[in-house]
Image (tube, rainbow, N blue to C red; front, side, top):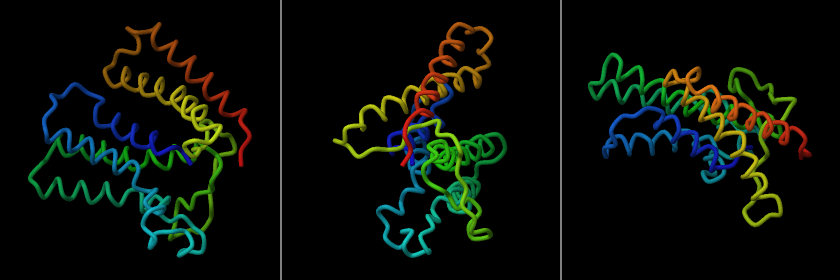
Length: 195
């Protein structure tokens, strides 16, 4: 699994990818996106969601669970009166935040996920780890894994930010540097021993 910091950071990135003015409402929205991005790990703190209650399946790491909060969010936004572009943008943001958790955990390639639970009980995993697994604070590999995670995710977010602003072509040098750094980080992560 990816670190909580990575999940929260991706949620924040999703909510801050543009240059909208900061207001209390936007700050709360970004905080909500960070929560949605980290929500599948609630099975660590909410015992009713723990894998031991579901035949050792982490059901919170299914598409059904990961997209439940985004669907409820979109319904709440629509009931609040938002329509059109605002609803579409916020719906896309919250869906990306929810799905990001599964993508990050798959990119670690340690844990098998029941992506299509309850419809299929099959477990899925990536054959190649592109991110390091989360380590406990204080462990010998904690800072290394956090640095490797940043080495991959920061350039990725920078590239996505440039793409959203349609500036990839104009910022070619920055784009190439980000791509090279990200690929070096992914290669380093792929060489790590997996447990």
